[in-house]
Length: 90
Image (tube, rainbow, N blue to C red; front, side):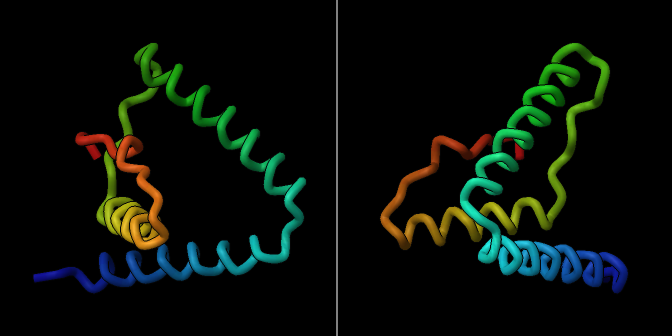
């Protein structure tokens, strides 16, 4: 049986993503570029800490899998191929 809490958490995560997407429509390109740079820096630092054994490797949640599956389908409809971003361990 599916847990009500798990379903509710899944719905809240999708609503959060939709809200963030809506907010990004009103943010300038320069601000988005700065955010991308800072996020890439954080990801690089996290990857370094995972490789050094300081942090455990994160596990993908069902939301994570559904989110990226939807992204790949949207990109495929737009004629873009980003399959090289897909890692088998997610």
